Image 1 (cartoon, rainbow, N blue to C red):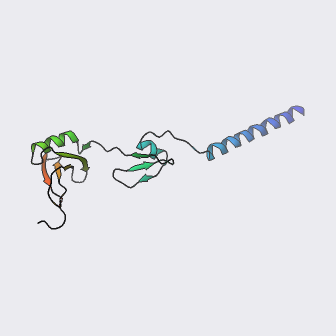
Image 2 (cartoon, helix red, strand yellow):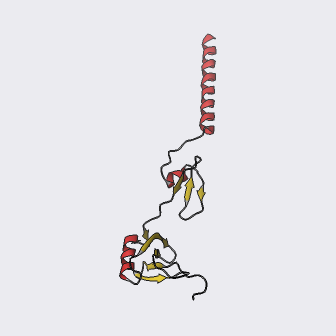
Image 3 (tube, rainbow, N blue to C red):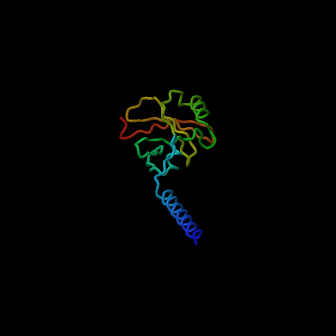
Amino acid sequence: MVELIGMKKIVIFAGALVLLLVLYFTTAKRYYLVENFNDCVEAGNPVMESFPRQCMTPDGKTYVEELPETCAGMSLSEAKEIAAANECGDDFKEEYFCNDHTMTWWIDLNLKKEGCNPACVIDTQTKTAEINWRCTGLLP
């Protein structure tokens, strides 16, 4: 009889311990080591609709998605070489992006033309380049 009472106490204690552990692991706040954009997203933090996308941690730290340096199989450095050998020249700004739909690199240029924001458009398939002046309004 004494052994049975001791065994009941052990079972009740073990059951309570299991219940406490289950409650702890289901309700405890989880902390993640966040060192980059992907870690931030995997930790469940919100992703801002921007380009490139950004993820913000609860403490306000922002991580920016790193964009690939290739476009339809062409590296950015190859695109710049093609641009320099064509009408675009090599006076590039730091801004660039890949248009996945047209399979073209767009690299902003340091060219001056009133009302325009020129970019060199490099076709990854034909390996050709041309200037898109991206002008707004009426031209003089």
